[in-house]
Image 1: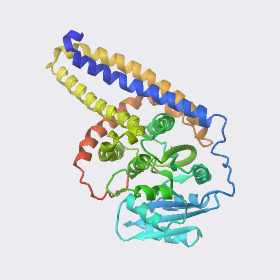
Image 2: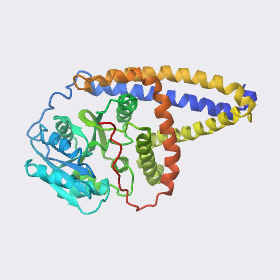
Image 3: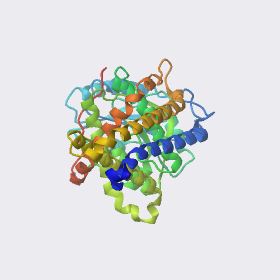
Image 4: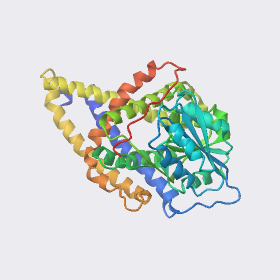
Length: 423
């Protein structure tokens, strides 16, 4: 077989098959290590962390753009937070709907809510900056305009900063609210078995690729040190994570800080979201890659190599897919003879490994499911995960990287209302 298709093509095929399995092992080993060190036998989200006299003051910033349907639910959940030293700052980022009226009405009844109105849509990064300018807190918590925080969420985020002077950010634990469709259930599994596992693994390694912009806390002095959020990056959360870590601020993951979020439940909405994520991630890597050649940046090498190899894997997958299409039309007879067997073996091994990863990660993650809900339902549909999400992620990376290369520096990254699924 090797002689028929050639060593380079055989090596590329092995790489495409082995890399996902290797990363599954790394994520699972890291996730289990994090669980043993930081979660096993520790208090859970339904209890409050110790809040002593040194509790930091917190300002929660909520950028809102066309959020008339979600803003009230989000703000009222913030008003119910069990944390004393907290204010809420809602930033109306030039909304074209009734968001401004909703926020003003809420401000009249919620004493710790202040509203900032921007005349024009400036993008999430600028909305966060506007909120930070008027914030009184030592710690700034940023959430999305549709996120519902558990009443203990802010307390779990804030308590991490008390005795950790070099802690720059703490990323929370997003949970999927809409679970009425197959895509919704798959994303429940994805956030538990992949995103949560990756954050745990990267935290054990020492560096995190990105905080979750939907629920994250920052030390205000750390943000000032790195120049706040970047307004020309499509994913301001990825960019600020790299900026903090380049300046040797640490980033932690707090799984007890629960935020319930809405996610796309259409393929089109999911594609647009993942393309934005991929483009923004590539923007960040391209912007800061030159600094990685310095010894002082060595702690970011692992995160960068994982990203770079995964990007190569995406293009390798595209190349093998093109070869398979050519083989179907009889243009590559040798590849047509061997590719089906190779892909079948790889597919079976990958499916079994995927089930093992999902089972282990959902076992770790089940303690964060609210009463009456279970992430185990996602295990039934997990066999479709590689088909839907790996293809989607590979495709978004393939298109997102050149899009990032063509993005003009200084071009403001403004947002549009995303797909929030079926309500």
